Image (tube, rainbow, N blue to C red; front, top):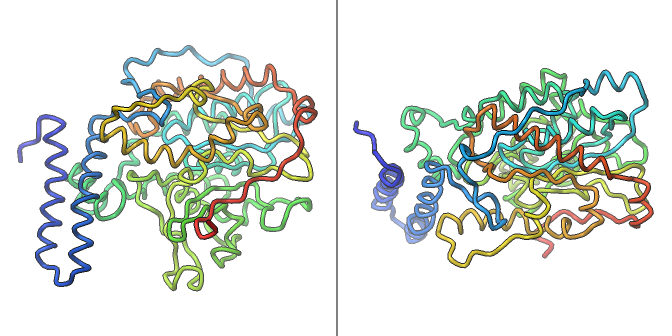
Length: 435
């Protein structure tokens, strides 16, 4: 069969095939409600699907709503090698007492190597930090889970810079042989271009290799914390079945009716990493009485409701040690975002998701109580959804994170921060039913 020769032809082929399938189904409907649902598919899902398939093929996504667009990666300037002299955090820990901190990692799609670079500077400095608890959303949840499992920053750099993210673009069944059409069908009928099975296996395997399978493997002894929060890892997940934010494993018992200690860590991380429109929402187990007898809830990217949960470990009674955060944007980008009145349909679709992702967290970044303990990593020119980053580009992201973290540490003074800011309670998790 002849292959389409240009971007428009590819997108029209994919979405046209999906539209024909829906039209055929519509002819077989017998009720008004069925016809109405199919009209919604034709009028809304097909055009949106067209937009995202166009974005997938052209690989020219706007990078968040910062008033800037991702430039082609071939134009990104190469960066130099990271500073020498860094040692394994495990080796340094044996030589000196390590200061304690909690850590929060922002979601950022395929830009996780930048998070690892920032963490490397924190764990490989003269007085390396030991992270008591780690939290994250989306890609930040994945990196956080690897750190919580005991993967040190040296090995984590290798994982995040050598992994071929294109392998995460998986389709099921016969559609593996008809990639673009399969992606269109996946988006229209399964809410995502890709199944996410390869991503799930990737997460589960690396955790298992370091002795972590269930949440019981990540329990900690800390009598100062509520029992449900005595875990080394916390993952933000968007529960779209109930319209609420989940913080796992904290909410397993109260909101899902399950014992967290026997639930799979990889399930929660895969749920949090379900980038909208790209990966299919994850069916997270839940007790029947908590899930309308379905036995599961539908979960998607945790970043939809809180992409940067910097306050998740804050204590109204006062901090025991600092909670540091890593955010994947230059500080001036966050505060200097601009509005484009003539945005096209593609920019609008991406911006709708980005606005939901960033709106609540922007309040934190505008507040020095949070921004003063945030490491801002410049990832300009790198799209969070470009699954075809080269190893050199991922290494450059790592170097950017390393440099940003080192610059932060050069002026960071925890005692001064304590003197400037009174303790605050974390915000309550989002719950649409409470509005």
